[in-house]
Image (cartoon, rainbow, N blue to C red; front, side, top):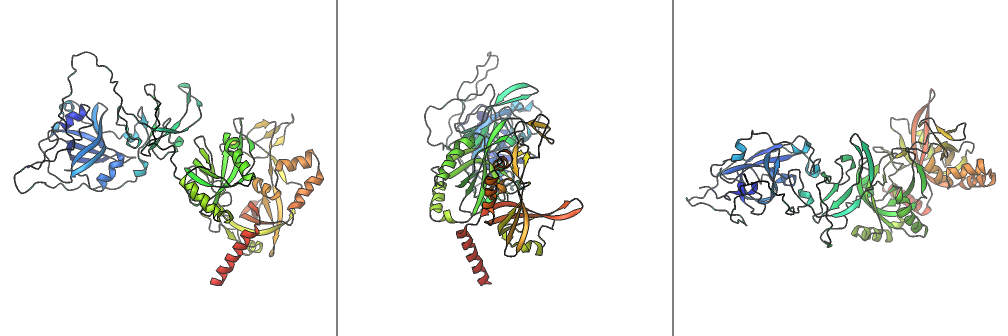
Length: 612
């Protein structure tokens, strides 16, 4: 005998019911969607049938076989929406009551669907909807083959009917007939609050209750439809679901949720007057610095570390002619790695200035970075974007763990930088060599450059061409830096950008002779490494030599660097100069030898030698 399903369940759901939690049967399951896995179900209450879409977070129920053809299920959370003149039930949560069962009753289609030509349910992942766009649930987007479970019978040995009733089954009240009764008033009842994780494009009226965790700057735009303003903000609810309210463009989305919502003229936003402690103030997904080495360029992630150095803030002229500020600092953590963090704009004078003062006073602050952007120019680094948030000495469990590690000896632990000196896939990263080995082993003569570290002493620095005048314009996230020349009106001209400037930038191009116990060689040091070697900016040196003509001070700075021992991280690559192949050696990092760290390194080398 058949199992009793909830009477009139399909009609009740189509009439607006969202609370009865009915028992229905799955008659068919179909995998649809070309870019996003979604399952379409055909549900029955033993009399009528209705198509339903399964929320992507429930896909594993089908993949694991817990829901299959013939299954009797109880709908826990669901909603009915109209899509292209068709009613669709969206199943947000459910429980399997009977995994396998024969078809119950003699279900037929709803009368209102009989007059509508049957169309395939559209793949909503490729449509642009007025409220929600893009693909939901990228976390579960891996494609998996699915085989429908075999339908089997469910009955006992006697003729007594098995009855499985839902946990809540109120009497069904049929929907009223509004035909020929005049205009219908707008539904002013408040929409049901649902979790952010359950948002999907099949819902008509919905509401979410969430905390604003980040707000972007107001931006102006101009397109074919005219001028306008737009800004974005991020939301976090009590279930940990995050989403962004912004134009549906994936390259602006830094959250894990693949849905993007944008507000229309009919949307409403209400301030909740009472604090809801169930909603966290912020949500982080911290990555160790060592994992950033393998992170994709332009990816957005969270990182936390100890601030070990903070460079001064410097003005940068963007390509649009607007000036901004840039400040570079270094973070380290327990993974044994350090990374450069570039602050842009207001971050430089706000958190950047605070961090600089703390470091100058001997304090090593903890910095948590929410939504930092990964760059891979000459190694991996992090930079701030408009959605980035910085937290100085936060009260997080991760921060407390990091502080405890730092105070217990992490302060003196050597860390390797993943910025500037590392190349993905290089087989000789962080390998200590002598200068003689560069020639003996033919380093730099393969298709890819070699990256090594040497301990060497500076023996000579050329001072005739130690720097050059450079273009200050920003092209994207990078400075042009091409050489500029004085034009007839005493302004600086860049041939590449075809623009003139009142002020130019000054960049190091140091030719340095270094030597160790095995020999000597010439290396080239550019901007950042030139500052690390000389201890001052190229502009300061240029002004001393050519404007103030203070040769004594200029020579004193140069002499103070001579016969100083450095750990030099080198990039070695063979390049063409005219018709001749030459090996070019570039300094990508210069650090004065820390003899405590160097002693530990040598002890470690000795122990490894004895193990052989």
